[in-house]
Image (cartoon, rainbow, N blue to C red):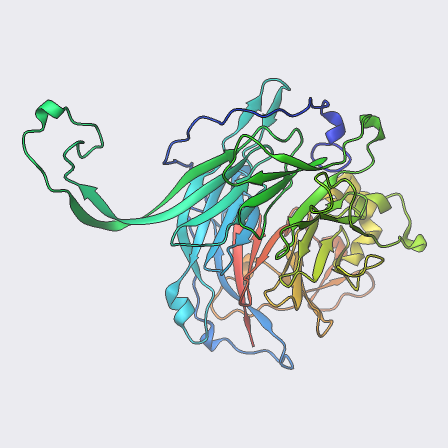
Length: 499
């Protein structure tokens, strides 16, 4: 295992200068996928509840969270391919996509009845499932390329068709998701099965007909963006112009056009001439939500760099650098590791951004580079256990973070299937648990507390009893409502607020 997680870029051979490659062969219009526990109808637990009668806890007007649904099998025997690796709402929240380690993408659609209910409920049904990536093998480097979906990003919807980008370690794909409820037949030049008819057999004129069929959702690959990354892709981000997107690996960031698959522009390259001088890697990258020329990327040294593509074609020289000076009292052997930023997200307004390191989540103002304006400890009680977390590799876990639609709250995950929600206005936070014990009608989530020592209270859990195999790495917040999706191993929990 490398310094930055599963595989260090130092272990891979230097790559030759990237050359333009010919377009890949045309992909078939239809795809077939392997079944997973999250898509098998027999194993799907789609627990939609009516929370109208849920009792309200005393809350001084603050929001409390209620269970809405859980997706996925509840078997204890979990296969590695069924583990959810990313979660993403589309821009209006009507669709919710998940990717797993088996290379599959499952799309859920908001239930119209739950949306029209009073109060509105956040319930989703399976909309489409398809196999996005397959396992591959790089014969030149003798390396296996996993089919695991690292990221999913939606494009803005401009018509009834939906488009999304998905990526594994090496290849980004553009998918088209469309509906079809009509079938066309009675052609003169081809048979019903699509084969071209022999003109000599055409003896009469047929009038084409249209037949109504049950609604069919089709996912077809439209573009494949490959052969541009030597190291593992950790981020993709769609530009606000909806024409370009970036893909970032450990040492480089490439800019693509959605219509060009055989050429990309390298906009950031931090690879040193001598790989022994490598001191940091890129951990996450994202475009500004409104300024198409601005993007940010974070590094394993705890810094965030803002780049402006108008200043130079190669953005090795950043426009701004956000970094907080280290507190000397907290200096330890693990300081460099826990300061590595695992995720960075710009706010919907474009004024702020959040960054997640191992122990905390920070809010930055893009106008102030010296220090964050807000810092929220996520699980500070783990600072005394960094040695054991280093030995079991948990210290390299990459937790993600997300904003709510109004930029007033942020959310991130922790261990023991805990996740944290921070209110920026009231400066209050709550720790909640995605547990199978709560999948009952009218269940309101109870805040959880971790006891670090001394006498443990009734509703507290000792830090020594935390399960580090259960972790919330991937979360998503509905862009317009208080509906959140939390990935816990192979289960997807959906919660909504109750005032």
